[in-house]
Image (cartoon, rainbow, N blue to C red; front, side):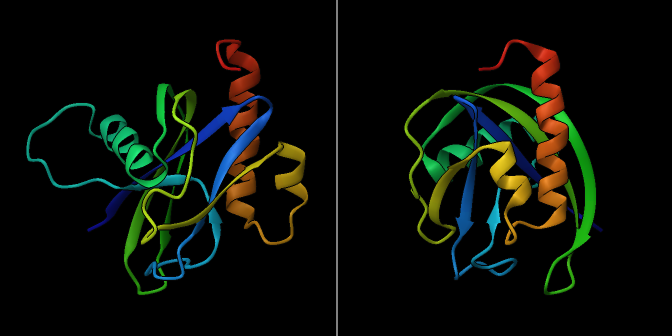
Length: 145
C-alpha cells in the first residue's frame, strides 16, 4: 500500500513558493519543500488530487490556487519506512499572502527564483528536478504569471 501525496509548485512574479517543514514533522523535518500533503480516504470521489492539494495549500500557508497542471509523479520511502506516491502540480497563485498558517507543519515560507533553487545546496535533487519540469510547463503555458 502507498500513501498518495500531492504537492503544489506555486509560481508568482518570477519566484516559486517553498516552505520549511516544521521540526515537528515526522518526515523531512526542517527541510525545504513544496506545499502539499496526503490524500484522505474518501471512498468513491472525483478530483481527489486537486481538491486535496487546494485544501492542503489553504491549511498550511493560507493561500488559494487555481489552474492546476500536472508536472510529474514519483515514489519514495519516508524516514519511517512508509511508501509514498507523490504527484506534483503547477499551480496558478490566486489569492492570500502565504504565511506559516499551520505551525505544526510549516515553520517558514520562502519565495525563490528557479536559479536560486537550482544553486541552493540545501535543496534536494528531486525538488530541483520538480522545479525544472514545472518551469518548462510554465514557459509552455503562457497562462501563468
